[in-house]
Length: 257
Length: 257
DNA sequence: GAATTCATCTGGAGA
DNA sequence: TCTCCAGTTGAATTC
Image 1 (spheres, rainbow over the protein chains, first blue to last red):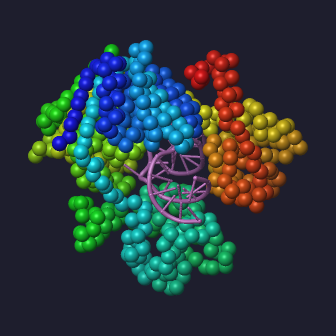
Image 2 (cartoon, each protein chain N blue to C red):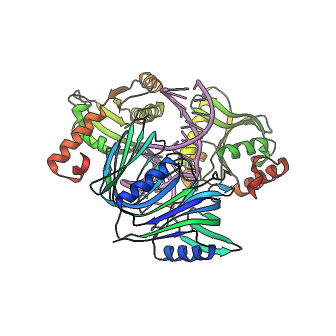
Image 3 (spheres, rainbow over the protein chains, first blue to last red):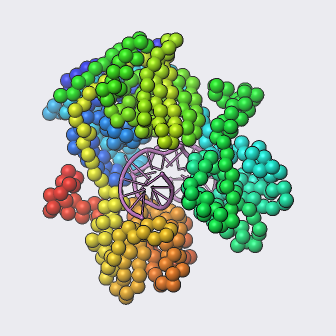
């Protein structure tokens, strides 16, 4: 049973007491405050005052969010120490990181509200269909790319980088396969072209296939210009296959449906 | 004067009412809940139940944090709609994005606490020494790179991408300059090589200089093999120059020290 | 520990 | 809209 506490409009002194206690007992803290942020480390920055949401997690991560967007205004992923002080009507939270040496200072003029959670529960884990899994699924089901294709190598290292899949088609020709989990842009086509060029320089005849859910116009054009091919894959279908696999093997993915 | 509200242990129905109201009036919401997350879009994922912090910002961004680390468990940066329902003892928050089509569903079994802020104030803005500023500083002080160098163009667009700085040295030769704010890896050297190749294909003799605080072994080797040069810059010195500039011009950077 | 690569990367600028 | 590229990128894996 989690223990939660909420505070509206605490004074600076009370807020300092609450935060110190929460940090000491590794609680999970979230508070709204009007504050400035100062950061010095790999870069240096300073902000004007504004309303922000400050999060301090049980593991010591500190994250400061502004009112817009996905990205935090500032953060400290792996703090070695967090200290709380109050002086001259300001609440000051200082988070220090050792390597690289970085200091984050949050100066709060007023604290609007504080929420604290002492949770006995670990966050649930999660799983998703990433490029690795797409690659492995295609490696074990190469007919999804082309009938008669046989995969010889996965993540084959060559000079310009890594070839996702490397196989032989039904007519015995070498096939280099580049996989993108999202819409493939021209850059992906260029990358495949670089790999192919490497093999052709070595005097080998080779086909190149870009595999992705979709591709931009520029990518398609670049592929055709380089004598390469595009093969569309259906992510939802692959996800379904993964779920089937998971069900039959009763593996880690059993939570999927 | 911001308006803030806090709620401890609201029931599912009350929580739904509070959240709907907050979203409708574009308030800033933060709540602790035991929940699962389902996401389908560019990837697909589902989690087991766990305690998490959910943030809904005035601009419609949704962020879900687990108890550890800097990165959120899940998010939706630019929602086109957020809906709140309750059914069978569950509070369900659904955030949908149009392009790319993505759906994020948060199912809460219990809500530990809710914090809401109606803030009249925009978050403060901030500034730091980024690659942009390094580039501009070097453009107006090219002797920091080389005595007698004259800058002709900044962010010059060519086919393979953008050239950071483009100039002419004291002997009248063309110079292409690639800047990195952090330690330059082999990829930076390759990028410069691609630019240089573009000019040399055009039949022009040209020097290439990689400018960075430091460079990896692989980068240095690649540079020497391609007949390119490396020039170390001192970030602290540039930062000092920036502060001097800011002081004398009383410009936007006056907060820096 | 350094270096390399991926990420639901995000975000911004330019054509 | 697409493309290119920076980021206090972070995080994981390999060397």
